[in-house]
Amino acid sequence: MSLNDPEPGDAAHGDRGRNDARRVGRSVHGAGGDRRGGDGRRGGGRGDRSMVPRADFQSYYGRPIVRPPVWTHDIAIYLFTGGLAAGSALLAAGGQVTGDIALRRAGRAAAMGALGASTFFLIKDLGRPERFHHMLRVAKPTSPMSMGTWLLSAFGGAASVAAAAEFAPLLPSRGVFRLLPPLGAAAGYGAAALAPGLATYTAVLFADTAVPSWNAVYPDLPFMFAGSALASGAGVGLIAAPGRPARRMAVAGAAIELAAGHRVETRYGLLSEPYHAGRPGKLLRAARALTIAGAVGAVVGRRSRTISALAGLSLLAGSALTRFGVFEAGVESAKDPRYTVVPQRERLNARRGAAPGPAPSPRTRKS
Image 1 (tube, one colour):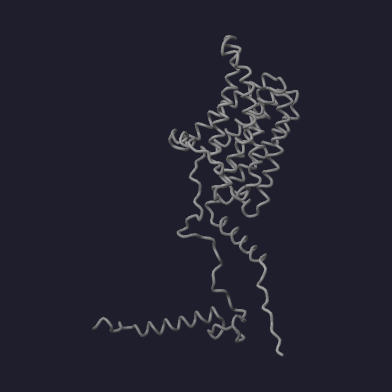
Image 2 (cartoon, rainbow, N blue to C red):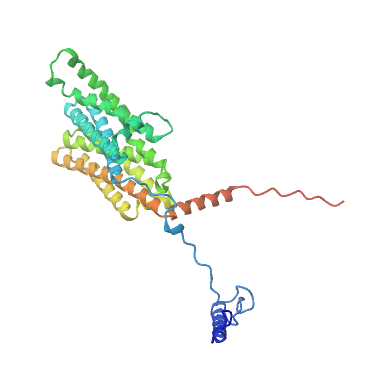
């Protein structure tokens, strides 16, 4: 028997296969096994069903279209400690203006501690300490990372001098040491001037990436981070030296953070979904509840040191959860191709609908 001869039973198998195909055709296309409907028109029968599967947003080999950030939760901690340093510097400046020595000292100490933690987590994420130094070789105004590095360095110098000035009473009041109090006052105001940039540059850095839910919310994310920084600084004040500046700062910071957070969670359609779904949504809901409780406690607990301290702890916890929630929402949006494909299609369809159609060609009349 040659290789081209049919095997015994091949004809029978072929007949059976053709009969099965006819039966499948009749079951799919309706009576008669034709592609036309039961009434003879194509697609007109009631037994028809679509053979095209519903579109599913998948990528090659199930991999994300946008590469998720490689950052770890060290960056989320860095976001919180950087905002805390900025808010504490503003709190210390408020103590300078009002003459509240306890508030000024608490703010300067908290700013210095938070700054040290921020530097540690940033260098840990970079991998090697010399990379931070290498970033200072260039100042690039169009790079949020470059500007953030210079902001952090300048803020660190001012905050360090302001914190060192608090030791002036313990040092001899002659020679160079006499210059510490005026230098500390100037450095305190300098740190406060740099604080808004330090509090918000990370939001600009996030929005400058291709991560869908970070990039889309660029108009509101800096305000959300600024309010969170103010609330955390006010939390330090409510714990260490509760007074009118800290309470006003708490209410203002909570109001800004809640208003901007509401816009982030509701204004951007599908790209707002990661901010109120899954684990990021739980974190941000808890942050919102803690921030509201802290602001209410700051107002109600004017005569109670315990309530003020609890309100301060609540504001600090709410600020930390806000940063973790925003961080994880962006990571989740990068993992799902839907958050990349659907907004692009919507923008493309909107541009097609808004584009004017081609002008009709003029018709020539026959004479």
